[in-house]
Amino acid sequence: MSGRSAAVLATALLVWVAADGSKNQNKARPSAAGVQVVPDPANRKVDVLIDGQPFTAYIYPTTLKKPVLFPLRTAEGNYVTRGFPPGPGERTDHPHHVGLWFNYGNVNGIDFWNNSDAIKPQDQGKMGTIMHRGVIATKSGAEKGELEVEADWLGPDGKPLLREHTVYVFRGNSKTRSIDRITTLTALERKVVFTDDKEGVLGLRVTHALELPSEKPETFTDVSGRTTNVPKADNNLVTGDYLTSEGKHGDAVWGTRGRWCSLSGRLGQQPVTVTILDHPKNPGFPTYWHARGYGLFAANPLGEKVLSGGKEELNLSLEPGGSVTFRYRVLILSEPASAEHAEKLYQDFVTANP
Image (cartoon, rainbow, N blue to C red; front, side, top):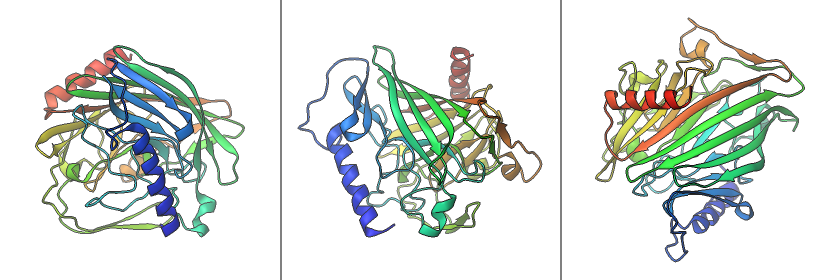
């Protein structure tokens, strides 16, 4: 990343932080109970507060190549996501990993997953951008808040391939935060093919404390052959461990299927569990988990050929005007979560969203 890009990112982050009050205790906060969804178009974001306390924000700055939810916090206000830009002691790899996002690495040969301001000029012709088009509706309430948005998936030529319509539903109480994301993608004038690829779909980059212990440096290569080196990290504060509905643990989770996956650890002395729930109506159910020990936690239902070692293949396609819908729930619990508890949460999600 160039010095200028880093400076722009840092300035943008300071604007969001000052605006949402997470680092500015002098800024007044609403005291209303319930979930408040508060548009802030001047700062290109929508704040989400629960009982007057910041939970997350939908942000669409010009310095990002897709809208994201950032940061995500526990009920106690601890950050679950890696900083943007990364803070002291955090890894700086994969600059496109910001907050909680939704995109894909191969859409008609265009890479939406890896795009960022750090992409070299010679690679920009292969990258796609998800452009926020508008906040359609917001709703605050005692039990939940809702945000409805639209975006376009643009090729490197600036022409849209897909129209995205997403509804977020936010909930929380004294120990829990939750996000439902319901995203419908509609092909526009051209047929759209999601060629099987490991880079997708619903992604979350967690803070350093929720990573898994790092035993050795690693190198990761994307579909275009670009490599990212991830050095061995200091394990002193690392506490994370994955668990799936199929009983897979730790690094063994990557490339396996499951209805749900939990990442449990501690933030300081506070136990925390982040769980992603898949939905039976999603394509490729049950999803493959593109979950890495260095902090990438992603559900990828579209990467069957890569993640199954060639045993399966999907290559989801949409004819012009055709659409597909993805439904997920992300839970942040201020407690350890057993497999039995995670399964109950999954059943609650499916029952409430048949």
